[in-house]
Image (cartoon, rainbow, N blue to C red; front, side, top):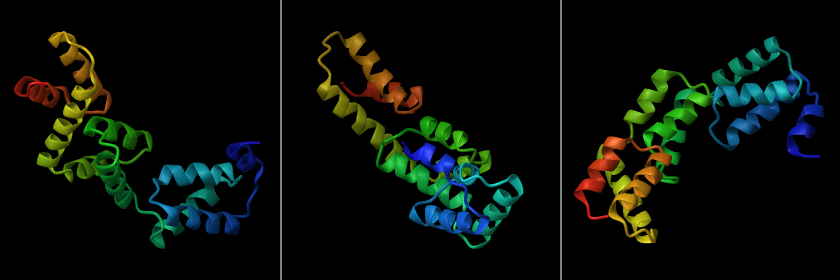
Length: 162
C-alpha cells in the first residue's frame, strides 16, 4: 500500500491533525494549499481544516510569503529553473499573484542572465548536432523547457557562439 492510500485510511482528530501539520510545516516551507490538501486527506472537515490553517499561520508554521520566496530561490539556485516555470508551479500551488510577482522580482537579473548563459553553454558542449540552425533550435527548446523567456534565450544564442 502506498503512502497516499495509507493517508486516505487515516482519520485523525483535529488535535492530532494539527500536531502532524505542524511537523509537516516545520520540516520545510509549505504552501497553504499543500497543507489544506493534507488535512483533507486526513479526514477533516472544511471548518476544522480552515481553523487549523488559521492556527498554523498565527503560530508562524505557515507563511505563504516565506514559502514563495523559499520556493523561488530554491528552484532558481538549485534546479536552475527560469521565471516562467517557477511562476507556473507557484500558480499550481495556488500562491497569490502578488506574492508570485514579488518572489520573482527578488531574483537578481544579472544572476538570472548568467545562470541561463551557463545552462546554454553546458548544454552546447553535450550536443552532437552540427547543423547550426538545428543546434540553436535544440538549445532554445532546452532553455524554454527550463522556463526561460525566449527573448533572453535568443539574445544569448545570437551573441555567443554556441
